[in-house]
Length: 480
Image (cartoon, rainbow, N blue to C red; front, side):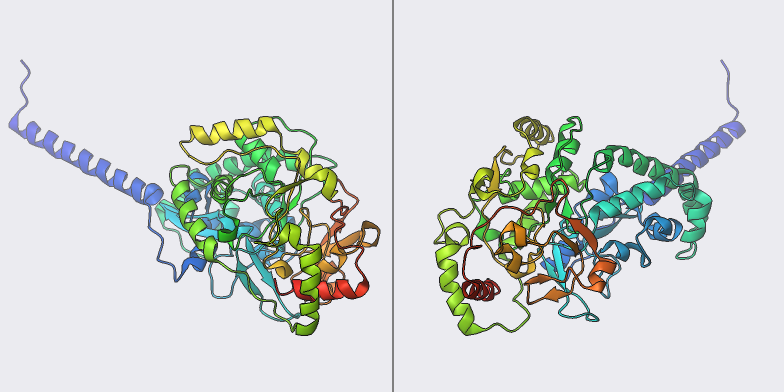
């Protein structure tokens, strides 16, 4: 029998110990550099958490922070103008590292993801040159979500998205140690490029020829749900829709939500929206709970301009007679109900994107993830919603095709056919945002109501009122 001498035994023990130590060091280093989860710092309040808090999407689909930082410089030619991500209308509060709706978590290395605030934080200025006021849970009408998605996926396909170029730009912002440089060069950058290129293929449906762009403040929500959650084949439907407000969720308990009432509870909407943002299915219900609690008591901001109290009182009487039936809580029997499109008469394209089959498969998909929520349905109309914070919810109708409240009281032939949305200076005369000035045209998105899904027809309620009653009604609606 072969015997190991005491000397060799000691040597093998030493070698074995070194191997174990090296393996442990490598394992700890790999864990620290790629898998270590650093808890979020406590937020000052629930609103800050809503605007910047993680939904755990950084782990499932996060973009490496330093690549996210470098991309606007490396791929500036794919942005609409100077200013980096700001050129896409993304709101960025002074004193904050990240834009509103963007999260940053360390999971091995810093990663960026999105949360609900990226679509649901409104901003406005009372005049040019002011610092914007941000209203959490309001509809974001400035951010071009489609533009952001196109930017990151197009950049990933560009020749400049390579380790040499990106690392050179990253070094302008931070110093990476040797291990991090090697990790970025040989692992993180190639994997990010592949992930974004794959995502470009998944988003190809929104880039089909002849399909209108969403523009700022909109997405195609039911097609997003349909294609990502059900795997159904692409079709020719267009369902561009304005981001809705999400404040005052307590008064919406028991109502169906989404523009078409396809989701029968606020909690279900939050869960599905979070999943669309690549939230971790294992924790999405926990996040939905705190988001729902915050939104239950979140109130819209008050109208920031003077209101004629006497005229508003007259307008209240007009409102109760003409509008309350569908929009006033406590006195309107149709509030929160779905009104058939044949009656309301607004653009039907948004409804045509969603089918009973899509709802069935989506419900099955969510159930397979182990998530419990009320099932989505198919409807044939649009929901009659409460009008809380109405002044800040411009542009109007489900597709954002009417720029202000004044035009909502006019028949289709008198409504603006072409305007520029995405500019955040408020227009108190029209009761909406400035969509026609030279600055609005320079910075905004050209909205053409003749394009598929952009129709501004329908909702003719109140259009036959006298000029005096219309003016009084507008004054009152500023107070809602």
